Image (cartoon, rainbow, N blue to C red; front, side, top):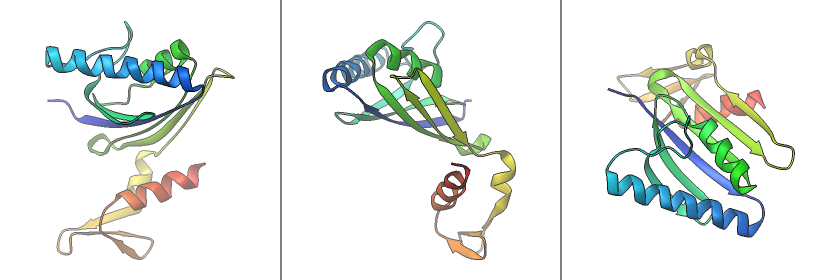
Length: 151
């Protein structure tokens, strides 16, 4: 059984290009719902599942084990848009952010290493996480702090 990687994507650029990009995402969502299975935006791409449209320039989806960065880059190039994807699959210690800039056709990625996850701990008794001497209700704030330090 797959571990699910959550992908949250923001799209920017020319208004018409963003609209065309999102129209394709909506089409992929409909196809996935009709088939009741994942869809691939390109031949070599990773399957996208449970696509959810947040608004006119944000959407999310699930993938198996890892983010769909190649598929997103393909779509970004196809529609001449910039993309930002935050992804996480904590069962496999995957947490990061990827960005694609259409103008320069460049991409950048920042992610946590496995040793970064050793910097905080979970307390079963209190149900909290401890990081740098402070307690946190969820690990999300800790992960954001650690990722921010890598920029």
